[in-house]
Image (cartoon, rainbow, N blue to C red):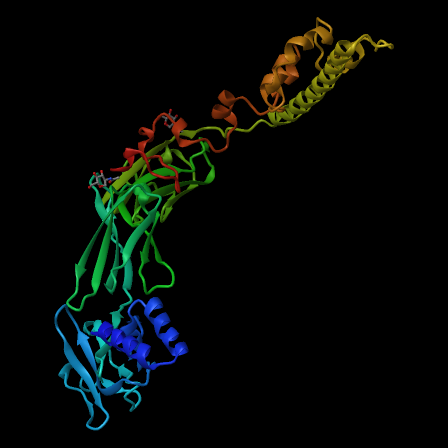
Length: 492
Ligand SMILES: *[C@@H]1O[C@H](CO)[C@@H](O)[C@H](O)[C@H]1NC(C)=O
Ligand SMILES: *[C@@H]1O[C@H](CO)[C@@H](O)[C@H](O)[C@H]1NC(C)=O
C-alpha cells in the first residue's frame, strides 16, 4: 500500500510538477528503501525499563502537499498477527484510547495530526512489541511506520558461598545468580581452584530470565579460604558485575605440640609447651593431659599453653594435647625427659665458628685473587709471547698458601684442578671449601662455617624440631600452622 502511494505520486508528479521537484521525487524513489515508510517517520527501535516511561515519536513528512490526512492510530502488536489499537487521533472527533491495558498509561504529546507522538508511562515487561503509527490518508490510503519497543530488565545479581565439609566427592561450594533479567545474563567464574560449574536458566512469566550457576569442587582443607569470582555480563550493565567469594571448607583438626627444647633439667623454671591446632572451624577446646594420670601440681595450663613452673621428676612424663571441633578430634603427645643437669651450650664452638668462617672467607679471597692472576696469565700466554715475562705466579698464590697452610704443593699447581669449581663461590661460609683447604688445620676443621648438623641435634640447637624426638607418634599430625594441608594425614 505505501509503495502504491509513492508510485502514484511519481506518476502524478511527472505530469504536473516542474523539473526540480520531479528530480527530488526520483531521488526519493532511488535512495529510500521504503519510500512510503519515509512519509511516516518513527524510531526503529527503543529500549525501556519497567516502571519508566517511553516516548514513541511519529511524524508525517508531507513531501508533496497533496496527501490529505484523515486520522492517525497507534497499533500495538504484542505477538505475530495480533493488532491492538491503543491510541487514535482524529482532528474533529479528538483522542481515543480503546485498549484497556493502555487506557490510563498512554497520552498524545501534541494535539496535532502531523505529530501524533505518544508517551506510554508505567511500563511493564509485557509492553514489549511492535508499535505502528498508521495514518489514514487520501488519496494514497494508509501510510505507516513501526517502532519496536524492547523492554529490558537489569539482572538482580547475587553470589554466595556454600560451606561444605572436606571430602572426596564434588560438591557445590559457591553459587551465583542473575535474576529477572532481559535479555538473559551470562555467568562466568574465575577461580584458581580446579573446579567446575554448571549454569541453568529459567524463564519468568514476563519474558525475563533468571540464570543460576553453581561452582563445584572436590573440597579439600587446602581449598578453605581460596577465592572464586563470579562474573555476570548483561546488556543493561555498563561493565561486568563481579563478586569475589572466599570458599569455606570445614575439616577436622590437626594438632602438634611445640616448644620442647630437650633441656628440662631438674629445678628449671618456666618450661613451656604450646599446643598448636588447626581446623575449620578453629578448635576452641584444648585439653592437656599427662600419660601418668592427672597433671602434676607444678603444671599451669592456660588455653593451649602449658607451663611447668619448676621442673621436677613429676613432669618426667608424656604430655598429651587433644583438640576438638565439630568434625572431629586430634591429639598429639610428647615425652618430656627430665635430666639431672642442664645441657650447657659451650661458648667455644660459636667463637670457633666465627674464626673458622673468617679463615674460610680469607682463603676464598686468596683463591679468587689467585684465579684472576692465573686466568690473566693464561690469556697473556694465548695472546702471544709477552715482552715482559710476568713474575712466576708463586707470589700471588703465596697469600693463599700462607692462610691455608697447605703442606705440600705450591699453589699454582694446586689451583689448576680447582678452577672449574664454580660452586666454591656461592657458598663462601660453607664448610666444604674450608675443609678442602684446611687439611691439617684443626681449628678450621672444627669451625668452618656453621656447626655440623649431627652435633646440632644433640647439644647446641636450643629449638629442635619435634620430629627429632623418638618418642613422638609419626609426624602425621605434625603440620605447622599456616601451611597448606595437602597431606591426607590431616583427616583424623
Ligand atoms: C567437570 O564436569 C564434567 C561433567 O560433569 C566432569 O566430567 C569433569 O570431571 C568435571 N571436572 C572437574 C575438574 O570436576
Ligand atoms: C626420667 O625418666 C627416664 C626414664 O623414662 C629416666 O631414665 C630418667 O632418669 C628420669 N629422670 C629423672 C630426673 O628422674
